[in-house]
Image (spheres, rainbow, N blue to C red):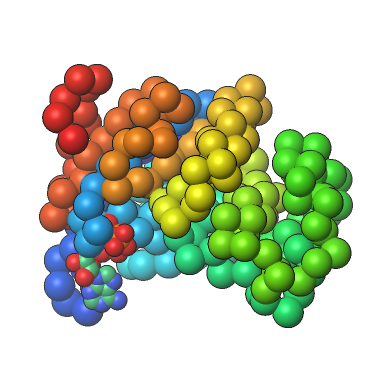
Length: 221
Ligand SMILES: Nc1ncnc2c1ncn2[C@@H]1O[C@H](COP(=O)(O)OP(=O)(O)OP(=O)(O)O)[C@@H](O)[C@H]1O
């Protein structure tokens, strides 16, 4: 298994948020993580990224226990995430924003990887020189996805990638994510419902009040 989460508990400021989470995503597969606002999706993604401490349980990636490894180790393991709020630097150009994780993590072939991302999403290359603040919210989501793909060559965690995106761009995002299937990437897509991810994913996991269960096709949302 690629991503293997076992009996995971996470607390924030002493309050238990995630309880006994078990979740498995095989290498090269896509999984949906579906839950209402406040269910714990972002908390789980942040825990996998090493941005929140784990109080119990383990997170393994490709057989390596990463539960207590520092967050920068995730970049070495080629794990990355796309935050819900995009977090682009408004004053920097799109290209500079895209290359930021390569600079921060000393990724040597960042420029090459950027070319690959631009071939996947040529529309970003078209506005590469523009400042991030000049883009629409949906365009910024595309850039945030592209930026996550620079270090994220093995596993990417997408936190509500379609949230607040106009239908045409949501469709485009969805087709870019579908194209990742051929790249051998393992992908987790968090959403409040499975409108956009249902056709993309190999498995669906429901999260409710910090607890996760696997749902089979046809289960009620
Ligand atoms: N910094 C924090 N301090 C206290 N409680 C927090 C903090 N961050 C999250 N929580 C709580 O943890 C729970 C899970 O939040 P989380 O953001 O993971 O949910 P979510 O499923 O991603 O929803 P959303 O889409 O609204 O972000 C919520 O009850 C939230 O109030």
